[in-house]
Each structure stands twice: as structure tokens, then as C-alpha cells.
Image 1 (cartoon, one colour):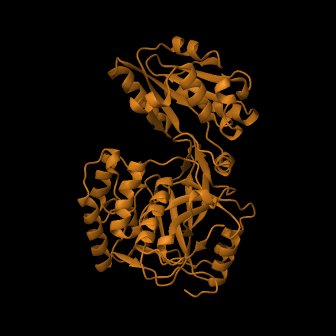
Image 2 (cartoon, helix red, strand yellow):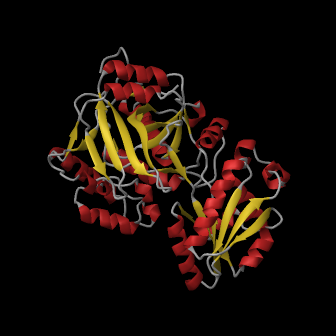
Image 3 (spheres, one colour):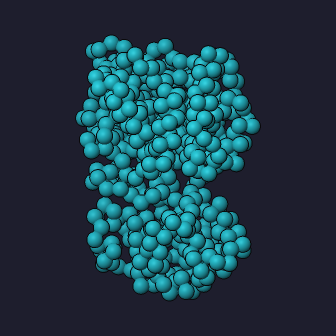
Length: 461
């Protein structure tokens, strides 16, 4: 199954970069144009200079920007801003963070190389679809720079926490780096070079798949880069770096693994009162209005009720906030999911997802907006932070007379639902999961050196 391997990580030189916090970034696909400008103001060596935002995210740019990134990448290495570890290692990566609920938690994972495998092989399993435009841009960047700048976030099954326990015992005493991000979360990396420990981890994964949690486009990009190399060199060695990708791996059973909901802000075309909206969905949902507060208070109350409901029932429940009238409702499915034809025709693993009930039953069938119209007219926005979603919804309700902003609140998708869907070979709707917190870009990079060989037990380094 999954092929795990150590690698010689490329990282910022602490003697040249005194504040690593100023150069690492969130993943490229969550950085807005405005945030990108702020990151550049912090430090000229910001990772956003290398791991470029996509032009499909409305950033200006052309193909010359990939060559410019390659030039900077080469210069930073020559100047010693970026240095490469001599010995191949697996890196422990712990994040001490505050969950939105206020709880302090620790997510324990590792960074290693993972052998690339086509999705059809069932070794690396996806749960989301990818988009060609995004992959094309990332592939140009990887081909130009010959490096993997950001990690794919994947999960694996390990109820006994065997892998983390082995690596934790073998880690070096002092961390390679430890930084506090803008949210106050502490990211710490330790190096593990002990061959016995590394071999144990490699053997553990030899009969297990891994599941992509975040980074489907990064993974598919690496497949494209590998295929390009195979076309140039049909005899490409199995232990070539081009057959591997850098991943962050976390056990599905890790107590610090959190999935947040991704709430939907629907810009309903035309004017729709709260009562009219409730009338449209009442054939499938019981609507209970939440009162006694305004805006944030209403939404906080409905989220609390949704969480309480989820603890004792498998039936889906949603929140609905009508920004124009400052009214909030708790929507509970009437009866079983399979009682509704649009859900009954779905495979069970998809029918059990709240996001499928929302998109296929509530929005598509009852509000009459299919996915093609939603995408074509850009009617949907996605938010992990409900307060941010409320602010946007309220502003839209004041400024746009042609559309009615409706904020739909969800409970989070469960980790086992991600693996169940991936095991079934099905695909979740867009933005079904938000694994929190995000892993940082720039803590560790993977340089692709054509004539190097990836380590395997018994084959040397």
C-alpha cells in the first residue's frame, strides 16, 4: 500500500531568518489578494514569493511569474537563506491550538514523502474533485522550480497511535523550529533520523492506504509532474524523487484532529422574505424560529442548538439566517433521508452527509437552484467563521437589491465520513470539510533532485 520515505528537507536558515513567523504563510489557496500584499510587507523572503497564488483566484500575473519564482528560489539557496538537511528524516509536526469552542488541543502529525499512486489504485484516496485550471497553474510552478513548496494534508488509520509513539521516542531532543502563528497556535517540528524508527513507520504503512484531507490539487499536480518525467524518461526509476510527494500525515483517531463546518452564504436571485423562504422548504424541514437576540447572538444560539441536536440524533439539522430581516431559524429534516426521492437515489455514504442534504434537497429541489446555476452565476460563498459570514450577509442585504443573502449554517462533517466516502470511491460536494488548523507553508520544503534516490529499508540512503 502506501510507500512512506524520509527526505532531506529544505528549510529557512535560522541564522538568516530570525523570525520564521514573518516568512511562513497559510496554504496558497486560502490567501486573498489583500492578505497576500500584507504577507509581502512582513518580509521580502515570504513564501508567497515562491508558492504563488493562482491567477484563477483573481490575482494578476502571467507565465513569467513562474520563472521569477524559480530565480528567487535559486538565489535564496545560493545566499543560504534556504538550507537543506544532510540526512534524510521524517519530521514530527505538532500544532498546539485553540479550537473555536475555546478548548486548547494538540494535533500530532508527521511530514514525510509518500509514493505517488493513481487514484484508481486505491492507495491514496480522494474525497473531492479537482479543477483543471488550478492544476495547470500549479504544474507550471512545480515544473519550473523543481520543488514541492506546500504539503498535502492526509489522514491514516492508527487507533493505537503506533506511528506517533515510535517517532516521538526517536525524535531529536531540540526542535528544528517552533513558531506561533497569527492565531496564537504553536507549530513545532522535530527531526527523526533514526533508521530503526523510520523503518518501523515504513513497515506500518506498507498495508495501509492514506486519505487526502486537504490538498487534492497539490496531489494531482504532483501526478502530472511525475507523468511529464515518465514521458521524457520511460525508464524512470521507482526510487526517483519524481515518484513521491511531500505529505503531512495525521491519524484519523488523533484527539487533536478537528474538522470545522463550512457554512454557505447563498445569494438567492430576486427578493425573498424569511417567511417565503420557510414556506419553500417546509415540505422537507420543520422550521423553528430562534428569537431573543440579534445577529451574532441569534446565530450563536442556533449553532448551539445544532450541536446539541447532533449529539442525540442522526437526522440533519441546519441554521438559516435571513440577514435582510435579522431572523434566524432552526431547520430539522422531517422524517428519514431516504423518504425523499432526490436523496434515496444517492449512495448511502453520500446520503448521510449533511452537505448533500443541504445542496441536493434544500437548495436544489426546494429552493429551485441547481448546481450549474449556482456556479455559473456565482451565487454561493463559503465561510468557516460564522461571524465573518454574518458581516458579509448583512452588507449584501443593504447593497444588493436584486438578490437575497441567505446564510445556511452546518454542523461539521465527521472524520469517519471522509474515509467512508473515499473508501467507496465517491466524491463529496465542494467545500465539505475544513480541517483546522491549516498547516503552514514554508516550515519544510521538498527539493526535487533528479539524480537522487529515495531511501527504502535495506537499500541505503
